[in-house]
Length: 187
Image (cartoon, rainbow, N blue to C red):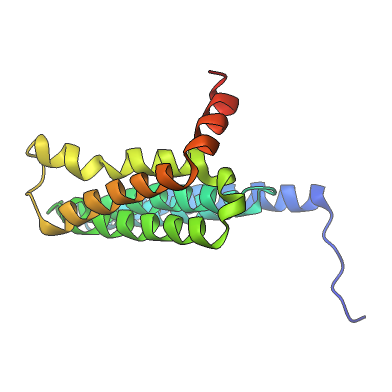
């Protein structure tokens, strides 16, 4: 036989549920081992955060009919939370907020801009995700104004790229954006 047999959807669903349960058990076991062996280090939280990130990625990837902008948005949130968990488990020196988050925001905005230019006619599919990403992109500004993180050049670059991306988005597709927002939010 040249091609593998197609897996039955019910069997695939059961397999995912079994693997989810095993992952949860593994996470609990790792936290328990962490508390017993090295309670001063929080590597168990790090391991659980990685397991959760992997499952968020897998479960979202298994969903059909999701566009690439939705995947980008899910990855921005998931990776940011994972890096915050890593930073917390290593003593929370705020590098996840001061360095990692601006880099993730810059990357996501550049990818969305690239999608805008590559698929201009299909851009309307990405509008809502683009606007949500712009709101997420303002996180560094909020953290800076609340004096939670130091004012850094990287955060400022992330904020400016978000603003330029928003202006570009409005300039290219203002009528389409207005129509899409009315359709999505029943305005």
